Length: 509
Ligand code: FAD
Ligand code: DLZ
Image 1 (cartoon, rainbow, N blue to C red):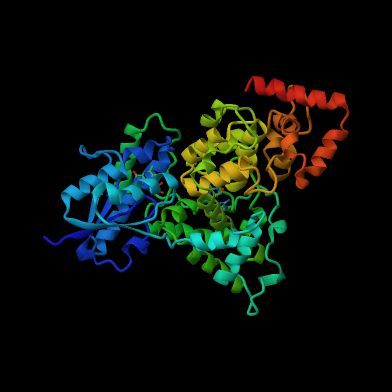
Image 2 (spheres, rainbow, N blue to C red; image 1 turned 180 degrees about the vertical axis):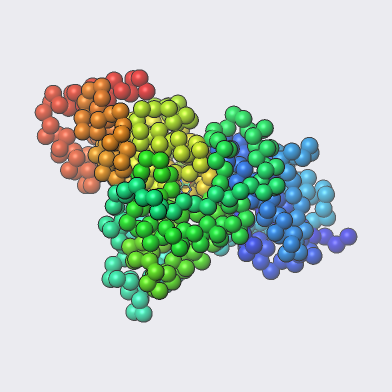
């Protein structure tokens, strides 16, 4: 029997054009897909996230077979399953005559370090292909970052606009004359019966099998399976993409930062799980958004705002993740040490903004960006929660969470744990911001206008306490000059009361 190339396809490599398959001959290749315990339990992923990944993997295996590939698929309940990628590659080498291994680079340090050992471990040549589903290569990001005192997303984003040509006019200038329309993307929303809802895909037989498996095996993982709604094939993901482009994108810009009680999705795309696992291609999506703008179907603030999230933020955080190295996860600039409150796993708190964001997270494995940043993230930041506990929670509970994208967003942007590599100032705010951008405060048991006392919104005292607690580390940050001036101008009694109120709240947390 002639020897073949073994091509492992990981759970976030579900793209037909994945680099490990390019120029490969189906007759000379064995594709290996593995459901393994180690990946499901290195953190306790939300049950719906595991269902999404397994079902999408199983459907993708079928689609690959239809295209003529031989796929060796190891399911979680295979009695011989060793529980790890390396163990399964070792078993596959016993099953098949293999002369080489070829794989697209993994999306995180943990898995990359396993793959880098395979050549020595198995004595088989291993080719690691770059993941070309991103717009910037590692080298391009390094070249851009090299020698800069400060890395800022905005300038990297402009490079990505130039590289892709997205929303540039014939002279290479940004459409509309400005690079960034963020200032037009901060409107609060009203309840609207016409608000688009994401498609709720009905589980087919494959998804139903996985739902049963996960319900039985992962009882101690967070989250519910009752609301499982994700697309699990490229075709379904394309339907959700179409729905977003036709019914939500035009309003996406205006209401990007808005929050409404009982409305988890608003005008967001809900496409991140599909972009991150490979069912959808980011650049292709952005090109279609730019075309819709060119055809006059969506306004510039919506098209630019959306494209910036993908070719700007998404690429930028990936660049930082690989540039900063595996020790990035250990950083804790503000030396925050408090454990994560139990209500992050139940939603059981009187703070309505938190119970809404956490409740929907447990139901849908989804929350939109401002909920992640300014509700759950902001609370953890100003309450002084250990950023590693916060990182673990975000990695567990969101269907789109993989370390390369989750860690810089959580530890860097949201918790300021990297001391300002990603964010130029901590995203800390009082209840005032939440009141401006949502309708939560109006029905909350706490009073957002009060700063101290039993009924005062806890975000208020916590915000000032956060600034006071971290004054030595933060006082020289130019962007915090104004709040520190306000704090230092307050009379001593007001400051004492605020700190006392925060202390009391934190003691019972
Ligand atoms: P939309 O609002 O419709 O945005 C469109 C797309 O832009 C998203 O699908 C996503 O691909 C991209 N995008 C937007 N913001 C970001 C960002 N800051 N970083 C990277 N991509 C972005 N995103 C993840 O994909 N995985 C994560 O694990 C993740 N963890 C986060 C943790 C925290 C603390 C914060 C503040 C943000 C995190 N984000 C993460 C970014 C963002 O919240 C999600 O991408 C977004 O909410 C996904 O929902 P959507 O598809 O409806 O996005
Ligand atoms: C997230 C995840 C889970 C829960 N399970 C699997 C799995 O069983 N098999 C698999 O191939 N991938 C899984 N994944 C996604 C991987 O963790 C992801 O591919 C790695 O983090 C590499 O970046």
